[in-house]
Length: 217
Image (cartoon, rainbow, N blue to C red; front, side):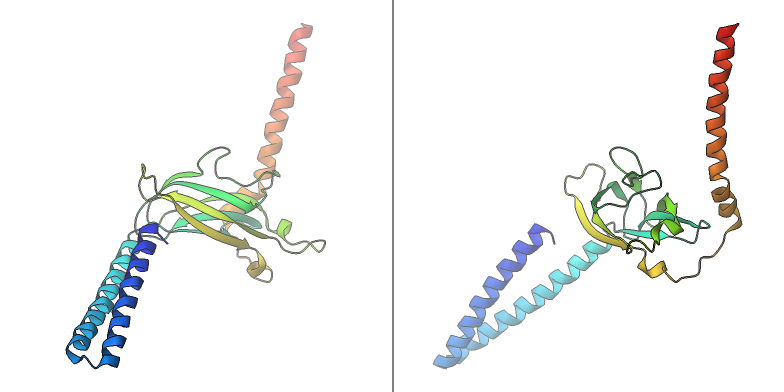
C-alpha cells in the first residue's frame, strides 16, 4: 500500500476514535444536542471513508498489473515464462528480482535480457515470453518440485521514480498431471532447435578447418 494512503487511514482512525469518544461521553452525560452532532460527524466520516476507498479502486484500475506465469501449451514439450499486463495502463522498465531463482536450459538465472531491464515497456493486454527448459526437466524422481519466488519491479510511467513492487511465486505443481497439447508450428521449432545449434557448431568447425588449410597453402 502507498505511504500516502497509510497516512490518510491513520489520520482517519485518529479522528474517528476522537469522535467516537466524544459521542460516548456525551451519551453518559446525557447531552443530547452534542450527541446528535457527534453522531452526524461519525456518519460523515464513514461517508468520506467510503468515497476515499472508491477513489482508490478507480486509481488502482488505471495502474499497470503484471501477471507472471508458466506456459506449457504454446510449445510442444517446452516451458516458457510469460509476463502479461492485465492492468489499466502500460508498464515500464520491468525487472525480475529473484529470491529463489528459476534456472534456464543454459544453467543461468532466467532473465528476458542478459543484463539490465527485462522488458522496457508492456502495453495493456500484451505479453512477452522466453524459453525456460523442456517440461521433463521440472519433473524428477530424485528431487521435489521447486517453488520459485521473487519480486517484479516496474513503473507506471517511463520517468516515474515511484516503483511498483509485486511479489510472486511460481511452481510447476499444477502441471504435474495435466495433458500437454501439441502445436504443429511450435513443435517443428522445438524439434529443430537442437539441429540449428548443431549446424552453428558445425559451421564454426568448418571455418576453423578452412583457416588451417589456408595457412598450409
